[in-house]
Length: 485
Image (cartoon, rainbow, N blue to C red; front, side, top):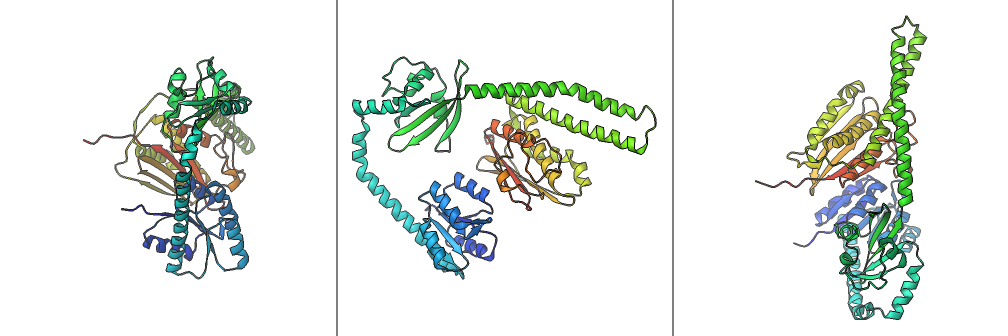
């Protein structure tokens, strides 16, 4: 059966959106709807839609400008614009931005399907032409693959001036070019390594294994740790018709400073625990030392509340320090639905106090994850706690856990104030808090801990949010393969 085309709809909620979805599904297309720009970026990065249909205004952003930006990233992606009114300036602006066409109201089912099919056919014809051109020039490219010694010398001279290490590999991962900086990084005395296998020349390093590890991304970033303690940020980028290139940037000093900063924070936090415990203990003893008037009771309660808040921050700092400084070797099969139910039970008094509507949905027969159950509980406690904390009294919190394509997807949706668009890229950073939650207590470390745990298990975490509409956090973790009896 032929592959179905994936059509991505990025329009604000309206009857037109529903009409487009029904029409395209009836025509045999797969349809995905995104509500916000963050969701659009995620879908474009993680899938390959055949066509994008944009609203003239989407998520309070000009659709033509948004389409132009997407074409800079995906120049072969056909994009159609939907406009409420047909005006010559709109059509001119859309075509000037490189969009494939414009749909205007009123729309009929046939209008939608025909416009989409025309754009898809045009993109297919363009792809056929490109493939013919590639075939026509293949012989020329192949003849130029064997670089002459003079050409190699000129290229070596160019990349020799680059301070970062540069390695060029052919499709079989044999070394093509290796600049002086790269040879010095690995301590290679010989200068002529062209044509030799990477795993032979650099057998004593982790680079061959890192390059061989699977990845869904065209360009990969990873850290390379050498035995002498140096650390390099490596970027591996495929180069069509050539092979690939690896660049190596020394981040040893950055890592050293990060460790020193972490050690300092950990030491200070650890040393604060004893005096904080003493302050809290004496504050509690004040009430037993004699009668207090109402003002004195209030002052003591304020002291206790403040000390508990600071103690909570100190504990989170220590926990985050442990996550960063140690390698978690404990692994066992963990059923996340049980962990989630235990987490919800922990916050049951607060849920009742705020009169929240709690919805919990878990799939049946979910596979386990291979992880440390303590870390999984930390991850869920932080996300569930945040959803309860930021939802107003009488609000709603939705929790769901499901499996899709051998991945477990944990979703937490609250009815809180939402996160401003400009803050969403930073909320997983240490101590960062959105500007619209000043009245809510928090350390700014909870989401950092969540991301650190997810990353340690090759998972992903992100948020979709809009001010006034709440936030939805997603955590995706690889499921443990289970053998059938």
